[in-house]
Image (cartoon, rainbow, N blue to C red; front, side):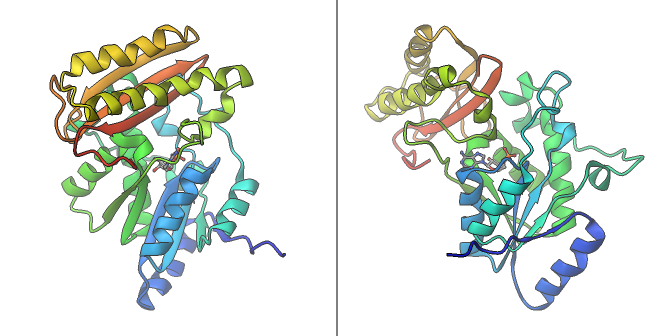
Length: 293
Ligand code: AMP
């Protein structure tokens, strides 16, 4: 069997614009899947969702320097364009936009999106400047591609809140679709950063999803006290000394502020270091939570 042809890759906005104008002129809807590359089945699930909903799917690959803190992994973030293109060919991507840094941040770039509200707690508190970088690059990608629909993963739950706020506040005519978290069979949420984990760290890393499952089970069984749920989640980390909690939180799924009582839909969210690798995971819990989330 021959492998599918690789999607066309373009690197400049000047080339991108006329290509997408032609699609729109032909009455085609455009779906956008923004990524930082190092693609896995979580990313390709977004492409598949776009293909179901839109006529033409654009995947962007750009490791955005402005969303990394000074001591974070920007330099060593995995860059795997060749295998990314093979994966994107297999799931039927129409076009890949992979700009260089100075195409996105041209010399003299001076404008950034500063967000309050949902951008402040959780990741916003631990990674100052992260969502400033995310909101800025996503706004730029939205303006470059001008999609009808943009697809994001619930894996980065707070990011989806930030993007929805951006769309609302800047009156962007774009529909945001949020897709379920894709996990390994053992529960580990797929992440480009999982490649940093050593074989010995792979098992301890499962404590994130295990404790979220415990939270979901407790809430489903009627436990409504957030403090009890948090305590039972923490217990599982006591026996994994190589995993260091950054935060475990039980929050309102819209405001991302801590709750004391579990509502019909509540978000349990975790960030933890496994060795030097920082992993995040989350799960909606409560009687109204969607189990597939
Ligand atoms: P990234 O390349 O890490 O910036 O991620 C690009 C998009 O893929 C974001 O919308 C992520 O939320 C989404 N994504 C990453 N991991 C997963 C996953 N395991 N399941 C679903 N979506 C994911």
